[in-house]
Image (cartoon, rainbow, N blue to C red; front, side, top):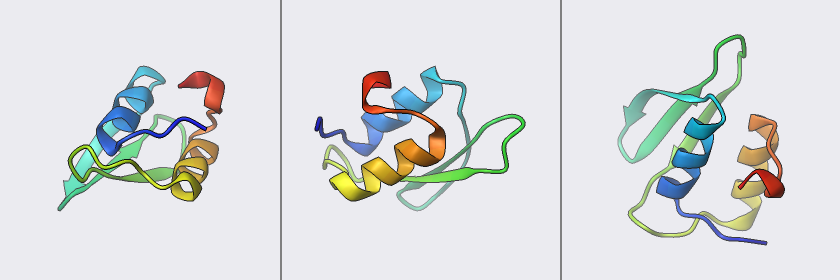
Length: 68
């Protein structure tokens, strides 16, 4: 599994139609038109997101490892 930082995941989400709604501290909250799902992406510099959280965020966004 490929590891991503919060910044990298944010760019992937934006490429797939998600947009930044707000920032709360070091967490960026993303939403998508027509979806009630909100994704809270931790952006802590270039630290990688742990694999369990990354899998959960990708699943909630409707993306797979191939979409990275």
